Image 1 (cartoon, one colour):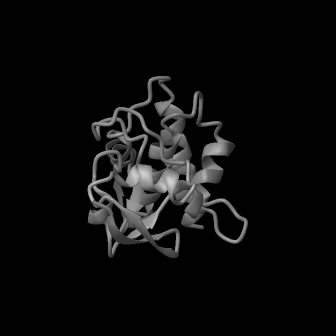
Image 2 (cartoon, helix red, strand yellow):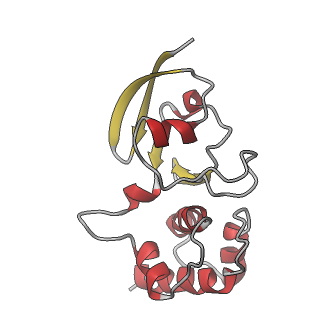
Image 3 (cartoon, one colour):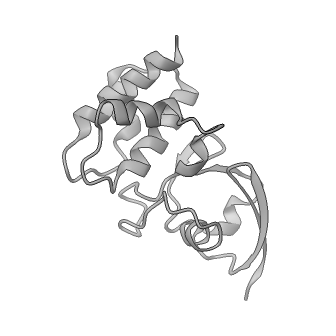
Length: 156
């Protein structure tokens, strides 16, 4: 039975009527018209559906939307501020760190969450942060290079 669910997404608070058990991914795509987070495996195993929830990269394909109430949610679309891409997004462009693009949401979200917690991560810490996101194209070396570049940009 639908209930009122209040979510704060990309700085906007919106109350929707939804089944409290409906996964946040569907709410983001259908109610908020945000398509950055992707449906990949539907099992919280590939990372395509990640968002930043209270500064942590979190999968959304299974987790109920009601569990995100009172949480600050940032999607890929919400990283852009005042018309300017987030430094991680720009670094991914500058290093051409994308191939098919399906994992890109999870990689960027994971990188942003990492750099918010640790602005100067080691390569091993970058690898660990990106590890939950599956990239079938094998572009990991470019992702690591992009996160290193973003870290340098943030620390200037």
